[in-house]
Length: 367
Ligand code: ADP
Ligand code: MG
Image (cartoon, rainbow, N blue to C red; front, top):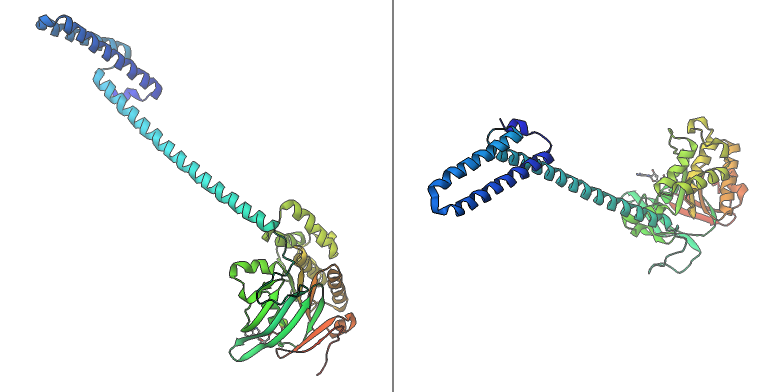
C-alpha cells in the first residue's frame, strides 16, 4: 500500500506531491484544451481524456512505482499535515519555553537589581528625624518609658529611660533575671515593648514594619554567651555567612572576611571548625561575624560568661579596641572585676528598673 511506503523525508514527499500536482494540473490543462479543441466532437474527446489520464497514471506509476495516484497524493498530504501539526506543536512548545526563560531572566535581573540596591545602600549612620524624635544627632540608642511584661502585670523591664551616644562603650550589669537580655532583645526587635518608645540608629524600633526589621538589625552586630556558631562550617564560612545574607559580592567578601579575622586575631585559623577552637577563639569568631558587615553598634550579651579569666580579658580588650575604632558597644555582663577595671559607663538594672547609671562607673555590689 502507498501509505506504508511514504514514511520518507518530508521534503522529498513535498517535492513528490508538488511534482504530482504539477502533472495533474498539466493533465487537466491538456484535457481542457483537448476538450475545447474537440468540443464539436464530444464523443471522441472522452476516450482521449481517458487515455491521457491512463498515460499520466502510468507515468506516475513508473516514476514512483505505486498504485493509485489519488491515494498517493491523499496519503502524502495527510502525512504532511501530520508532520506539520507535529512541527507546530514543537514550535509552540519552544515558544512557551522561550517565554518562560524570558520571564525567569526578568525575575532574576530584578532580584539582582534589588540585591545590588540593598548592597549599595550604606548602613544608615545618620539619625533619621522622626516627628517624635528629639533632634539629637549624637544619640544612637534611646529608650523612653519602656516597659515589657511577658506575663500581664509582671514587668521584666519597668519604665526604662536611657540614651546612648554614638561611639560610647556601655556596660549593663545586674543580677540574673533583672531584665538585661530583655533590653537587648527589645533593641533587636525580637520583642516589642508593652509600653514606651525605642530608637536605634534612627529607626523607631517598635513602630517599624516587619519588612524593615532586617534593615534595623543590620545596624547591630550581636554576640552571645554561647557563641552560636555553625558547628559544621569552618571559621571562614561562619563569618562569610553574615556577608552572604546581605549579598555582599564575592570579591568584596574575600577581602572583608580575612580582614575582620585578622582584626580579632584569628587570621591563621580560618579553616578550623568551631569544635577545634577554644572558647575564647570561638567568641572571636562570633565577634568577627558580628562585625564583618560593619554595623555602627555592637551588642554583647554576657560575651565572657563561658570564658576563663585570661580569655575574658582578651575579649574585653578586643571590645575596647572595636569601640575605639568607632563602633558603639553595649556589653551585658556579670563580671564585676572587669567592669571595675575598665572604667566605662555602667548602667545597673535591678528587677527591671535602672537603679544607677554612671560615667566611669563600677559594679554596684549591694548584696
Ligand atoms: P537577665 O538577662 O537580666 O538575666 P531576662 O531579661 O532574661 O533577664 O529576664 C527578665 C525577666 O523576664 C525574668 O524574670 C525572666 O524570667 C523573664 N523572662 C525572660 N524571658 C521570658 C520569656 N520569654 N517569657 C516569660 N518570661 C520571660
Ligand atoms: Mg540574660
